Image (cartoon, rainbow, N blue to C red):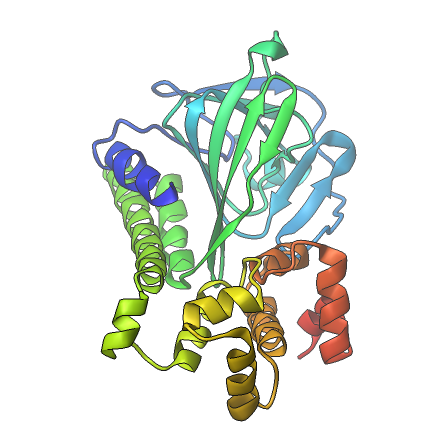
Length: 341
């Protein structure tokens, strides 16, 4: 679904300039179908409450947070209203920013981009993405791109009246995206006559990298699923253990059993156990756990994903179970492991 959305709607909208770009940094100038409305309110205080490694500031009592890295949001369907808060520090840094406006509301139509630079206060999701009367009319589906040094995560959220739901995140390992995002933000703040065109070009490059990463992931899964017993009989695929390893690597985030692995390797459960003990000196279950935890260690060290989300990406949807398994193997919690030098 992500790949289809990027190929058929998001990329064409950015390339042919039909998709409005809203840069979430006051002061704003209204343009096109995106409306930005200032609201008279007290400025946000400067106190900082660190929640995790991706959110550097939270104003819990005001319903805002800011992120450490850039965030992009595409309105898939409906309309969304988003608050952008203003702090005293922002008014000190930008003398032309009116101090009477404590926040702005960006009203975003379908197929528009909301681009949020680091440390900009935005709604933290505690309220529906709707700042108008008649909350029953609220409806939006939003696709989020959360950037970080190791790549980005995608997730979709839906607002329907007062209800808000989110899908599980998908992680794309592509370190070059952060540099592209930096250039994108630079052009969005520039005043050159060609800045808008350059910003769209950088956004296009970022989306093309996402498209390629998703295509490679899809092709890898299709290659795995295309293996058949006939191919095994003709000798056109690898050994049972190689097939088992490949299946495990492609499904580390999913719930799989020994029977699933054995069926993919075209051997019985007992034969699979015997092969693993001969080569790995451990059972298939222990090997699966080991590979999941090795991936978790890599993500803990190379990304700023929350520990809970890393657990989900490594096949442990329950945070307590993930921490318990990790502690058993490494004698430290995932959070403590991340803080190690």
